Image (cartoon, rainbow, N blue to C red; front, side, top):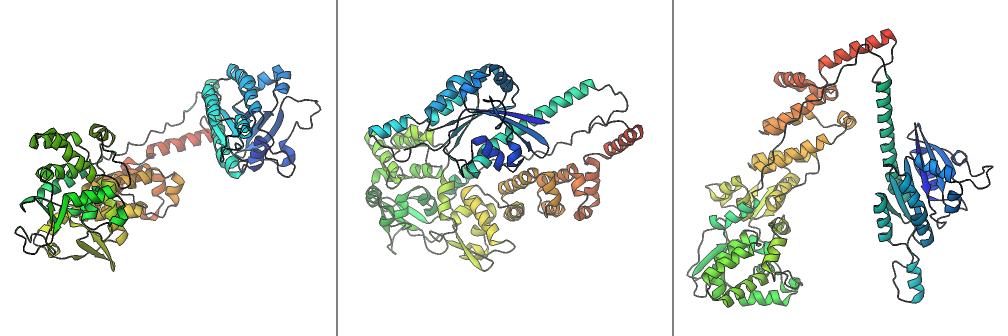
Length: 611
């Protein structure tokens, strides 16, 4: 089987090395590990007896035993001199490569005006690669002098190359140099992809012809049925929004209380949530200093709106939470304070529902000027330091950012002592955390911190049976609603931790990760991997991961010929072994029929219809 490549156009001579011709095609043939052939065997027609051969012909072997024939024509005048040969070669091409030098507009226009019309007439679903070779001059240091303007005018822009590729439906590549990266991996990768596609197409056509011409009507080969469909794992919807929104109403782990100017309690909240969305609250709660923020408008907003009261004889002081009592904050602005409950609900729901916030404030404040004033203060609270306030149009901002953004901002506080009110002790090290987030996101921890347990009044809490890396991944999910295990083993450890704390959605995420990783493994990797799939199955069953255990049983049955050769296959229980044997692929019936067919073929000395 052979592949025919036709290369057209002149990529210039800017990359000569050691005084040897080093064009795009010859460089690829000389460097590609998939192409074999020495220097003397590559070039056939360079010393042809013909005075001006239309094409320079190269021959080599690709993929071991595939003949690779390349015809290269860099000059249009020679191409046009033998129209019959040129037309036939283009018509028989499996792949066409068009090349030009980005610093030579003449070579580009020669390709565009001369070669392209010929290719369009002869093109018949043949893949085309357009290679723009070279580095544009003066591109890094633009200048306005006449000389540089002239130089830039002589370069072929990327836009021109892409437009030309669109006209042909071609693949456009820019090769800044003819080194190993651009030739071997970039150009070579694309060319070899099309070579494989051409081989597949030729093999398919060959099989069709063989089937049509075959008149053998003896014993037919057995038909291999498709394996059973794997169980579908249904993902659990995220309840991240509702978890944090419910935290405002349940009043658990409150560490800040707001008061109006008359020292009457207005609302309770959580520092960690407020700081996750606002640098104003970071400044107020000393998470960041004015030097860290460096924004006078944020500093001024903090000073104008809030004041912290540390008076021990404060009339509304409470001792509800363990450790230190909630921080008392006086809201100086009476109008802002009257709408504070609505503003907190807006912040806890994701700080993007501006229309609802404006409507709630308008119900309390009849004057439109007062409504606008309060809205502007909310925008100042959510302002990013050093940037102009981008929240001027509430409707536009709501449409642009309709997603909860605590999952990124809360990560700033993960495994950091800022505002932390609980410390986990794991394997001799400590991990700081925040009770409010843990209670909102995990029902087991909510019961642990609010019930009659030792952990409810303790700051240092030991954790057993889990590694530090696994527990940090677990906390990352609670804080951000996402996780990315390093591999199947870590995903299984995280699944066990999620089952221990009854976080079902994290269990499903880990199950899906393990399934995705196993499905993506080729058969050779499955056969050589050290992972004990039966041990994985038993852990999934022990930790009540029914979806994963059912899927793993089907996976073992579908890859029966691989896993049945492994020693751990004998560790399957009688029930599991029975299930695998019943659903194995290929089935015993097929293997028996295949053995009988092979025996018949050898006895008749016939040629197999399949092999």
